[in-house]
Length: 125
Image: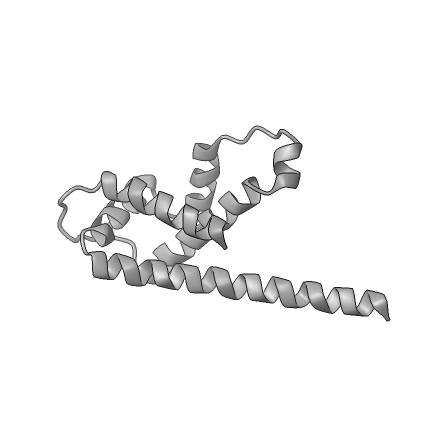
C-alpha cells in the first residue's frame, strides 16, 4: 500500500508542477476516463517495482509504456497533460479524483488477495 501512496504523491507532484492556466475545452478528458488511465499507470508502475520483475533486469522505456496506456484508452499525450493540468488547478477536484483512484486500486488488491487465499485454501484440501 505504501507503493500506491508513493506513486500517487509522485504523479501528483509531477503533474502539478507542469500545471498551466488553461481553459476547459474539448481536449479535457472526462473524469472517469482519466481515473481509468491513472489506475492503469499506477498498476503498471507497481508491476515494474515488483522484485521479481526488477531481478530480471528488464529495461523498459517508461515513456513508451505510458504511451501504450494512452493508446489503449485512445488518448493523446497532450490531452492527457491538459486534463491533469485542469484537474490539478482545483485541489478539491484533484483530491476526489485520486481518492477514487486509490479506492479502485484497493478494490483490485482485495480481489487479488481473496483469489490468492481461495487458491491457497484449495491447495491445502
